Image (cartoon, rainbow, N blue to C red; front, side, top):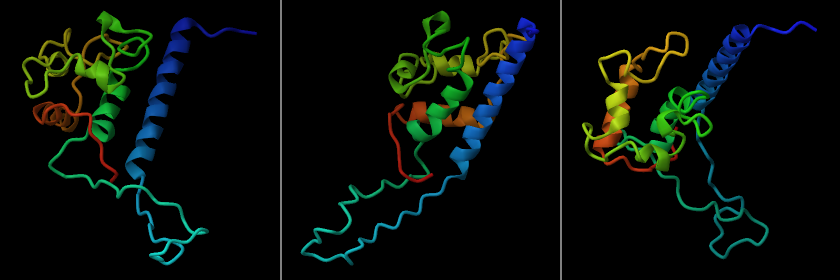
Length: 167
């Protein structure tokens, strides 16, 4: 059995990770929520022992002026920062973990961009300090402006651990 060279394996691993992120992004952005919450029992006020269980609280719609951590911000960090060799729990480069709200908040000052280390690194003009890094060149590459704007707005809105039910 012939083994692949180490650099070939890492190149294949990176491509596999990129492919998985791309597939997850496609699934995330293409989802549609149109639940039919009409009770099977026709809304019988007396209840129907054999009918649908209580569907729970009404879905919380998204406000277009609000940035939501769970649906908009966390995917940016997970796909760009919390990857193997960078800021996932196993690698924790420079003791920074960016996999969940609590760990991200350690590097963010709600309402203050200048005191939010993670935002400073994402917008740094020096390619040697800019994050995230390109794994091949080890130089920073700026995220798309749309993503940077979301992170900026989220921090300025108080860096809340919020979510909504719309896609």
